[in-house]
Amino acid sequence: MNIPQSSNPRVVIVGGGFGGIALAKKLSKKEVQVVLLDKHNYHNFQPLLYQVSTGGLEPDSIAYPIRKVLQGYPNFFFRLAQVQEVKTDTKRIKTNIGEIFYDYLVVATGSETNFFGNKGIETKGMAMKTIPQSLNLRSLILENFEQALLTDDLHERDALMNFVIVGGGPTGVELAGALAEIKKGILPKDYPDLDTRRAQINLIQSGGRILPAMSEKASEKAEKFLEELGVNVWKNIRVTDYDGKRVTTNTKTIFEAETLVWAAGVKAVGLKGLDGEELLSRGNRLRVNEFHQVIGLDGVFAIGDVAQMETEKFPEGHPMMAQPAMQQGKSLGDNIVRMIEEKPMKPFVYKDKGSMATVGRNKAVVDLPKFRFQGVFAWFVWMFVHLYFLIGFRNRLVVFINWVYNYVRFDREARLIIRPFKKQNKVERHKLMRD
Image (tube, rainbow, N blue to C red; front, side, top):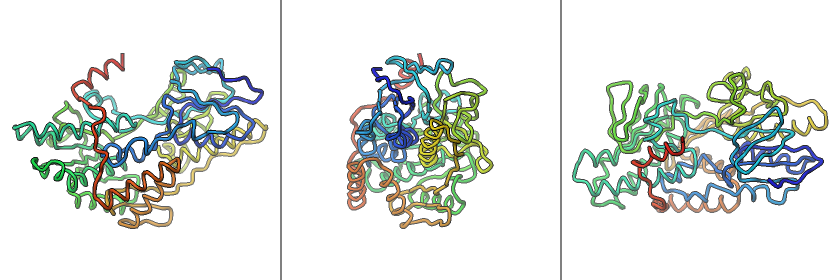
């Protein structure tokens, strides 16, 4: 990999997400050599992916070059690489561009969509965890409406204009709200010769309420907001299969839809060599102690979505969100320095700063440790927080201008089919990728 030799300990970070970036920044001016590996050369701000999918933002507004994030930091190296195997016995990592030795390895690979073994949904449904997936979804949505113009079959036309979103967490709720606003304010103008009033947005939640991780008040208010927008909220229903046109459930309810978005669960992205049963817990997460050390392995750490740190308050690990990942990255940075200096490490304590979700224009719910509020003010708080955590001044400025423009004009001008997506080829592509 052409990484120069150094007398300083080498810390290899796998993954340039929230946790990996936070750790790299924390170590940037310490007496260590930091090597960050990622299969993409950019950091992706996942909370706003749904806006890329619905034409509110272009992908470069929520992505930022990893090299620029850590530009100018001494002893920092980035390599565009895909990790193939971790050899803990020799402290080496095998990648598609070669091998590298580590003194300390930090796994920050994040999470991916969990289809829970349902191949029908995996091959014919849509995920929304990466920028390419969001662009695929955007293209599919627009292509379906273009196709709806061409068919004389009313049943097929309705299926092309129907959406099923599985999962009532923040991702599902925010996507449903955005699609409802598109149906109300944009589709009638874009497709005047199409009865877009027949379009249906269905949000399916297997539990008794949406946003189950938030307060009951937030859940009730979010559901009310969605219903005001025209979203059909289905609770206590579980999707069992999807054949590309028909969504079947564990009840007699069946949905005819050409678009199914799966937002019902995630699992950690694992690495070969760190996949033993004794290392993994539920959701493919690595078991770690209070210092982020992978239990049973020397010099190997895990942070973010991939790490399962069981505490009294969080017996199933910390939430798989950005805040825990960033806090863990900073904590581990301090602890690695303390290890090198032969000082005792400090246990990690998660500070829950609250959670929030937006449902649409002037509609959001916010749960803070001491305050809970909903409506217009919550919507402004949601926007401020997301702008604050975006990386890069340009990205903040572009996103802010887009939001102001969309608000004033009630428009989403990034509804472009840049890269056509054909669902019928998805099964073949999935097989090729798997093989």
